[in-house]
Image (cartoon, rainbow, N blue to C red; front, side, top):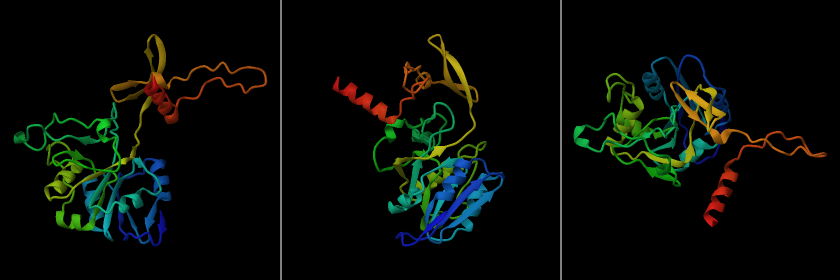
Length: 268
């Protein structure tokens, strides 16, 4: 971490709930380059008990806020300071799920609340619902995980131990993050989603290929699900003339190409 003086923000604690061994270099590099208010503390709690890892971190925290991290994410060097700049009680980024089709890890609450505040048929948010700008207050009764969530100390003090609880929504599942979100809302706090921040989520996957319109194209396989990616197949380049570089494959389109294509469609 890089300690920065005179940020205008108080010191706090970064709480990392991890397994026994580190998992991703991307997380380590993000943490190494992270700018923090001077005096900020880093706590890495390691065990197979993810819920208690968070609780132990909060018990030992110092300062006026806690930033909750897992070691399967990466983030920008200035993200923590941006979150502190919001000056809200709770703020959290958007994290994609690790399973196909990689929807946001945010759930709508039940349509019929008389059947309970947690039900198995609740819908995940669509990406279009989160494509605005700035902070979006999570509607009360909806759920989001704690990945990258910044919470002020006075909020945690009001909630009290155990801050994270497992088996509360479904006795057979952890869901400590969803219950944490629910209890924050029940205490009257707004969970603010920063729609400008995607919290990259790392996992192991298999690169394979599937036939699309009779031809092999790249695909990603996660568990028993496969996503076919025909647009990720490079196109052969005819740029083989004398005196020019021998470029065999055209580069894949990037965001600028996509936006240019969208502008052309709008004009047409």
